[in-house]
Amino acid sequence: MITVRLLVSVSICLAALSASASAERSDAQLGEALKSGRAFAIMRHAIAPGFSDPDNFDVDDCATQRNLSDEGRDQARRIGKWFKSQDINAADVFASQWCRCRDTAELLGLGPVDELPPLNSFFEAREQREPQTAALKRWLKSRLPIKRPLVLVTHQVNISALVGRSTRSGETLVVGIETDSKEYEVLGGFVQ
Image 1 (cartoon, helix red, strand yellow):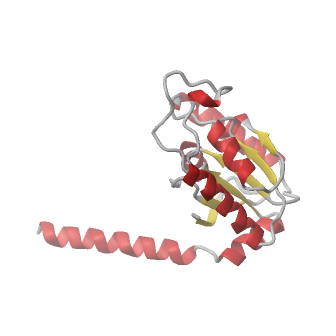
Image 2 (cartoon, one colour):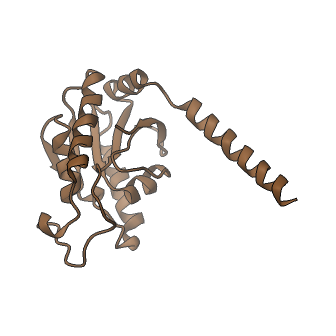
């Protein structure tokens, strides 16, 4: 009996994954959505070994934080190349104040990077999830209509709170946004 239940559960999971994957757009479609102003990119910072932040964490001191590894810096550059392969050579780029996010954003090579506090991690301060996510939604609404490609570099917890989807290091999601909608639709994503 357990074996049958297990097989049914696995079959349901595989069907869901299949449906999810087939709903995602091609790279070209994602690039067009970003250029059209109907979507924005939100990404988790590139590879920064470790978990959470050290006890002596100071947002103004990169030496107290988890930082990008050489692999993470290379990954950030590859992600920037993806944007350029979609004919996106410049964008409005905003990042969390954490060094690993700012460094990722700068290595994309898409233009100046502005810090945006609603993109800061609330991993160690879970009570900030709702107010910070609400602030990010208000900020996004204030940007409509999106006039040129928009790229946000943040943390896994922030992305999960906004779009309900977990991400790996360096994973970029392209998220559809409509002026009259309160929800965001993940159109697709990629990891380089």
